[in-house]
Amino acid sequence: MKKGALLVLIICLVQVSLLAEASQRTAMQAANEAYQAGDYRAAIEQYQALLDQGYYSAALYHNLGNAWYQLDRPGMAVLHYQRGLGLAPSDRGFRQNMELIREGFAEPIVPIPEFFLLSWWKSAQRLLGSNGWAVVGLLIVWGGFAGLARWRTAPQRTQRKKAFLVGVVLLVASSLPIALAFTAFQSDTSRTMGVVVDGTPSLYQAPDDRSNARRQLEPGVTLEIRDQIEEWVKVRLVNGEIGWVQTTDFERV
Image (cartoon, rainbow, N blue to C red; front, side, top):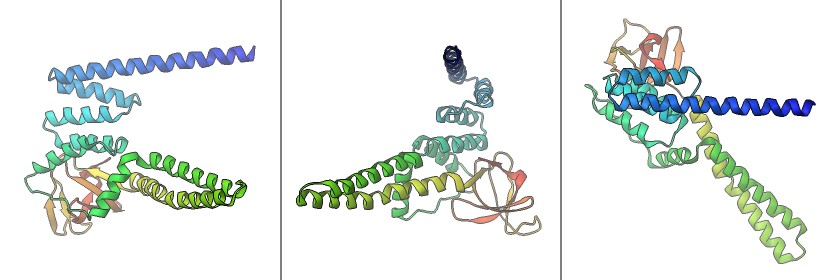
């Protein structure tokens, strides 16, 4: 009796999940049609409604960012591109769109060129992400231990030598994907980002509006948050410039 009730409950939950997924797909399609028809405000309202319902996807953030861009709101566009990038770190579309917006700044903020090895490492991180590299690392570790187990049990000396060599090589090789997984996870969780959404706030030299203003920030400027003292936040721009802004000057990603 209990098993039958449990089975019915599982079937009901699956049906509810499928209905919710179908409803989300229909809502997404309706929002896309509004966007294609040029009704960007309606598209934004429908995309935002999906977010409010707990539906998140890189495609949703990409489309929502595009809709805001069409309404000449680069700050809101970059905010959603950044959020989508968190779901799809290897998606070049987000980076290209943000670069296009950055090129339109009245006062250019040119990113500092990265050392080629660091650039390669970050590209490798984005290739599989932290979860993907963790799986690869664990599989290689498993293969390494399997090789060592074979070394202990192989009947012939030649087989034992080969198994030992394979096991050691795999265990050493596993350090690379594990390091990529660890650094990718740190990058995803430790870097707090913000985006200037509206207005042109000043980037101050110190956490005081009476200090020297380094520059005016435009909507769409991305900030890396370094520290906070009450309502003042220490940030770093993509060009390496560091200064202070107020918490009301930007929105966190």
